[in-house]
Amino acid sequence: MKKTVQFLLAALLLCLGSAACADQLLMIRSDLPFPEAMMVLQNAITTRGYKVTHVQNVDIGLTKTGYKTDNYKVVFYGKAEEVAQLTARHSDLIPYLPLNIAIFAERDNTILVTSRPGVLADFFPDTELKNLFTRWENDLTEIFNEVQDTR
Amino acid sequence: MVEQNGKVKMMTVNPKRLSKIFNNAELNTLCDEMTKRYLAIMDEAAI
Image (cartoon, rainbow over all chains, first blue to last red; front, side, top):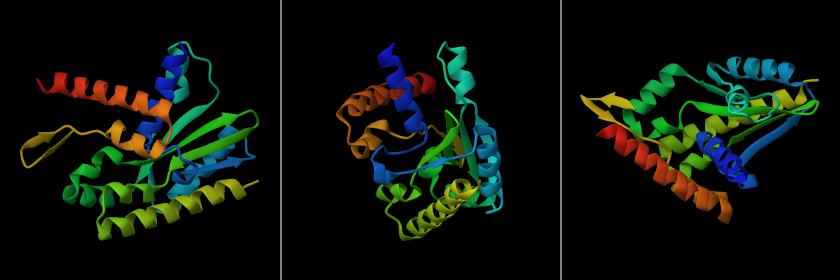
């Protein structure tokens, strides 16, 4: 059972395309309850020109398979035209897109966590891509700050 | 999975590659296991 849970956690981290070292992750704690934090997050994403493409209900999947969990989702987002142009030239980026953020409840707080897009530069050492990853990371930092600063 | 220029490509993130930056021996083992599972799934789907 413990091994299965560890495996599921590893799978989630990998779905995020992420790293577990603290400096490879962006993570914040919001004082907002989960529903409000989710709303602020999606609003912060869209006001920066991105579109929320999918919300994966990790909690529902876990509950269906017998695990107890609080609210736990993964929000996928991106700019459709940008992704289409990018993946036409760099198809090996496809498994890492769209960008995503895990959001889960911890008692009365909400935690947001994702990998830094800059980590992708280790895998794709292309100057053009590096600039793009930097922009994604700056946008993501703004999004996280907005959620954290909202009371 | 993506179709480009008449060819279908099946791709995924390589857990083994990612595990290097996890810096966690226990996770490395799980990542190795996941890479094997991913390959098995992709092999089966490619038949």
